Image 1 (spheres, rainbow, N blue to C red):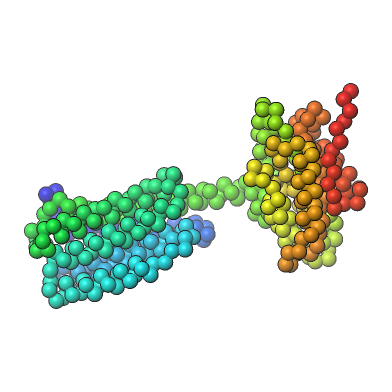
Image 2 (image 1 turned 45 degrees about the horizontal axis):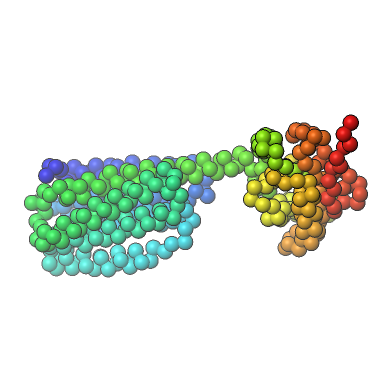
Amino acid sequence: MLGIDNNSFIIISAAFGLLCGFLFFSVRVGFPKTIAGLSEWGWACLLMVIAALGFTTRGKLPVLFSSYFPNLLIPFGVIVMHRSLAMFGNLTVSERPLFALLCGASVALGWVTFVVDDYGIRVIIVSALLTVLFGACSVSLTRYHLKRFPEWFTCSMYATTALVMGARCVSALVSGQTLIRENDTSTIHDLYILAFPFSLVAMSLGFLLMANRALQGRLELQALHDPMSGALRRDAFLETVEREIAVSRRYGSPLSLLITDLDNFKAINDTYGHLIGDKVITNFSAQATQLLRAQDVIGRYGGEEFVVLLPQTGIEAALAIANRICTCIAETNAKGVPPYTVSIGAACLNMNNPDLLSLLDAADMALYAAKRAGKNRAIAAPMKPAV
Ligand SMILES: Nc1nc2c(ncn2[C@@H]2O[C@H](COP(=O)(O)OP(=O)(O)OP(=O)(O)O)[C@@H](O)[C@H]2O)c(=O)[nH]1
C-alpha cells in the first residue's frame, strides 16, 4: 500500500542499528560505571544489525542464514534490551521466561521454515513473539518514574512497537496463513517493516535520555553532597538554611540549628588510624540521619563537625533531638567502629539570633559550653536578656 521496498528498509535498519550501537559503546566509555546497561544496549543494536544483514542475503544464502537465524536474532536482541533496562534500573527481573519463550519459538519456527515452509505462520510466530517481548520491556519500564519524559517516551515507544507487532500478528492470523511474501503489500506489513528501524532509533534515543538524566542526577548529587558522609556540603547546607530562615520569618514558624562535634577525634585518629576515623565520621552521619525527620537537613561543616537544620522546631524539641543523638552515639556498637561520643550545641531563631550568622555563632558557643562541661552532652544557647 505504501509501496515500501523491504530490502531498502532492511538496509536502513542495519545502518540505524550500527549507528545506535556505536553511539552506546562510545557513551559507555564516558559515563560512570554505576550507570549500567549501556554496553548491553549497544550489543542489542548490533544483534539487530546482524539480523538485518542476514535478511539481505535472501536467495543468496541458505534459508537457515537468510531467514531462520535473523528471525531469532531480533527477539534475542529485544531480550538483551530487556536485560540492559533491568541493569540500568537495578531491577531484579529475570529473563528466563523470555528465553523459554524464545526457545519454544525457535522450535516452532524451525518446523515452519524447514518442514512446512509457510510464510504466513512464520510471520505469526515472529510477530507474536515480538509483541510479547516488546510488551515485556514496556511493562518493565512502568517500574521507573514515568512522570519523567525519557522514561515515559521509551516506555511509549516499546508499547507502540508491541502494538504494531500485535496488529501484524492478528492481520496474518485473519488472512488465513497463506500469505505469499512477494504479494504481501498490505499497509500493516509496511508498518511492521517500518517499525524496526524507527523504533530502534526511538528506543535508543529514549534510553540515552534516561542515561543522561541519571548522569545529571548523579552529578547534582555529587556537587551537593559530601562523598564520604553523604551529608550536604557546607555551601549547599548554608544555602538551605538561608532559605528556611526566610520561610520561618515569613510564617513565624520556629527553626533550630545544631552544631555537632565528635569528641576527642584526634585521639581516635591517632589510636586507630585515619581510615577508622573516616568510618566513625560516616557512622555518625548515618546514625544522626536516622534519628532525624525527613524535613531535617544534615550538613558537613568541617572535618568531624556536622550541622543539623531543624525546621518547624523550637529550642526544647531541638535539645531533645540533640540529647537523643548524644545517647544513641554513646551506645554505638557498630562493627569496625570504636566507641565514640559527640557534643552538640543547639540554638534557635529568635530576637537574639535573627539571622544565619548569629544562629551559627550561638550554636557554636553552646557547643563550646558542652565541650567545657565534660563533652558527650548537648547544651542549648541561652536566651540573652532583652536590653
Ligand atoms: N579521619 C579523619 N580525620 C579528620 C577528618 N577531618 C578532620 N579530621 C581530624 O579530626 C581531628 C579534630 O581534632 P580536634 O579539632 O583537635 O578535636 P578533637 O580531638 O575532637 O577534640 P575535641 O573537639 O576537643 O573533643 C584532627 O586531628 C583532624 O585531622 C576526616 O575527614 N577524616
